Length: 170
Image (cartoon, rainbow, N blue to C red; front, side):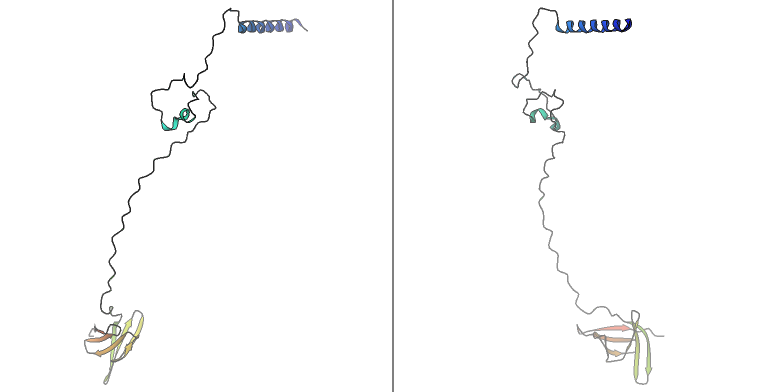
């Protein structure tokens, strides 16, 4: 071994011996008694603790909060339940009244043809042409009662009521 290594080891060993001597102590006094806190000696604070921080109370007051590994509950308390709303039944709905009488005429006047005593009118129902003569029943619902120079009179067969369709003069 060289001289530098020996000097280094002597210095390190001296530092170790001094550290051990200081830590053991040279005083003749007895070490002070350490009191371990119990549930009787712990004083509770007079302030209120929020609901999420009541860890010590939930654990039974044995914890003083100094243990960093003690279980904690960071979940906020659930909100109080909503008050039950009284359900009010809606007012009864008036029955649907169906108007008495026939529906509006589905026919539209398109033209007429007079061949002697026989007169024919051409009607339109949407895109479909309909040929009508006096006394004929159209689509099992309407009967042509009469054809005059200014109007056509129909009878709605289900309700037995009469309706009139005006003709335009050309």
